[in-house]
Image 1 (cartoon, rainbow, N blue to C red):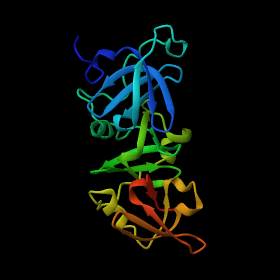
Image 2: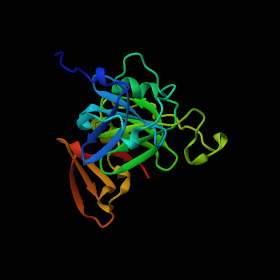
Image 3: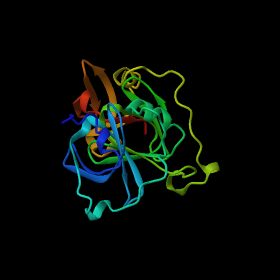
Amino acid sequence: MEMLIDFVQLIGKNVEIEISGGIFHKGMLIDSGLDIVVIYVGKTNSFLYIPFVHIQRLRELPTWDEDTTYDSPSEKPIEAEAISYRKILMNAKGLFVKVYVSGNQSFYGYVSSIMNDYFVFHSPAHKTMFISMNHVKWLIPYPQNTTPYALENEKFQLVPPPSSLARSFEEQLKRLENQLVILDGGNNPEKIGLLQKVHNNKVILVTAEGETIFRNLEHVKSIHLP
């Protein structure tokens, strides 16, 4: 029997995907690439673009599963002949998207630039953000002409990315040294403070109370200025 390779034989089938952190998604497998899969969740009428690095397991569901009894979508919001994580990010430029990162955090806005291991994200709530590609669990594009928080186009203007961007996430963080920053959306007071130093894969942050916190750069998901 031929071995199942890259889920090609499961395209058009209903599947369940387990993602790191004990998160489960059910939907129709729409597309599959070397490092990303796409499922359509009929219950919410949404497409989830899931980097393979966070997938723990994937299995086909029985046809009678009540959570997946939805018609096939007519078209995908992001089209690409041969999909990859980077290509999807490139094609997502200009679309309103939801980016879900590790730690149960979602950001809403627009991808503006893609670098080696991070991308620049413009959010109405957080302004310009730098998000590590390694921590994106899934991305959901919204339909054309949809705007964040139902803002009118004239009230929501994209801010051009900084003219000079570093190629790597670590180098970009170094450019923010000696500035007040917010890590990972600021969901913890210890992630808001003065970025004192980035060195040897460590981030040194001084909190509002003057405490010095050392963080492993590998676990920093996003950074932005207040």
